Length: 225
Length: 293
Image (cartoon, rainbow over all chains, first blue to last red; front, side):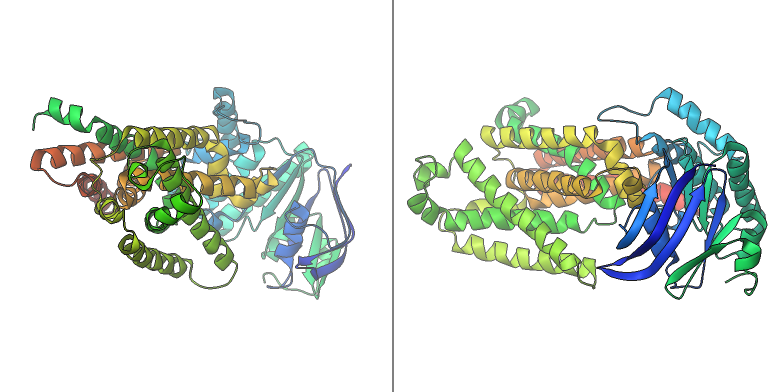
């Protein structure tokens, strides 16, 4: 399995001050890795570092992925925007669009197909803001699928959704990893979900990151943070 | 007054109101969606303050710097040199104000309060600059009242060129500007030049405000930046619909304002704003009905 993302002795932080350091982490094709830890421990800093939004202060971060699909928390997207679910999914094609070019009918078809893949075939014309939390999260996953990613990074995709929706989302991500070889990293507070679906867990605490099998890393910790 | 006579006498003003009525609400849509509509009040006031300051220093400027060999009386007429001079002052104050807000924005505190503070200061300074201006007090007073019937050919040309270019760039970059406004981090991950796009959007809005304020006045700009997006939002089911409806509401508001102004001999600027206000009523009713349903 090829390595898509690799941190070697990396440190991430802000204004020259490291929040987390000495990170050794590799994410391979077909692997689903969970990122967890107490509030304020530096999960978001690690996640932003892996996304390339902040550069490493020390060490190195190598990204070999061809295309990265990013899924933010759905709460950060403003409901004021008059966007249909299909329009949100079509944003995934904006990377390819230059200048006055508009979303093509082929891209619209691809967007509909991505909605089918996340089991939301009928919501395309509905306002994105009117969907439930779980549906919105799956629409954002469909948007990430639009770029045909080989690496997906998701920020708390199961936050604020009910258990059934969380299972659907994690099942979908696990399928992407095992059947299509996509490397997936998710931040989550729901440790039981990470135990049942992830091949590795990165535990962020005390300014560093421990990586290993969920059974080993999460053994001393309960079900949810 | 017959309509043919009105078109003959005030055709340039009518054209300016309609051009602004279509283009300015498109800029207002981005302010509305980014929840920065209050900029739609502060920026035109800053531009008006710049124009007033330009009038106040004009005698000194002509004497010491020069203005295309014009003297003070000819500089007050509709010439390109005078238009460029005022556009320069309006732009200086608009972008200067934006710069101040960016610098202050790095500190904690209320953004709305900062914008409101700048608006108040700009309003007071505008009145003082107008008072200090030996030549332009009447013009500035008309500008502030929204009396736009005296728009000249060069003013219309300046407005058309600036707003036309801004509108084309807005269309050209619509997808990127939407992504950056809606989901900044995803845009960064997708490799978009986020800071450059946000700066460009600020420049487009600033240039539109500067040219618009100089020509049709701050009152009209307030109205066209803020009201049409509010009127259009309840009806819009997509971003394209929102932009088109906002432009349409701006045009409709301008047209209603023109009808009221010529029909009842009222100042055109405030009539355009009230026309836009009338357009918000159906949206408010529709939104209320949908909420209750």
